[in-house]
Image 1 (cartoon, rainbow, N blue to C red):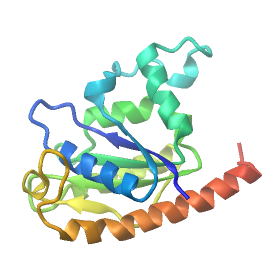
Image 2: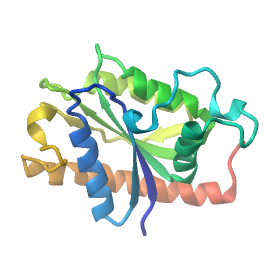
Image 3: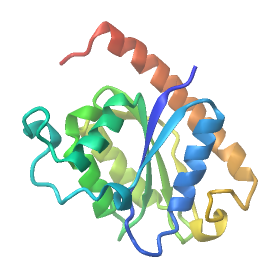
Length: 192
């Protein structure tokens, strides 16, 4: 049974290399039969947060905000692919999160962190997990850190180290388990 999964990528830098990890995740999700949509700041060009999506009258949000909202509404789970900017959340990812607060509620999420160094963005991933809890998405226990992302994947997201195929397995198994469990509970109703 496939799920609709939004993959939120957080960098808009010119020489970004983390997009390789995002492409790898999207490819693995599709291999497993899921509908995976990559949301990246360069494509959607969200403005800096002024009004949250829910603050617009219905049908009055700018088109580029509405396009992202439609993907997030449809999604049954989220994967956040994030670099580490000074040990923190990339501003473009935080902006994307903040625009759509209530759309994340009662759905699971996973964190794929990366860096060009040895730690794979894990310091930032811990901060992101706190933010995800605040916006109402359940962050799965397993995270997928990607050290030396510039050397780990080619431009198309194909791993240069075949062990990444094994490393992502537990991550996706957990995401699917939580997506299934929370989907069934949402069908029974949510606290609000």
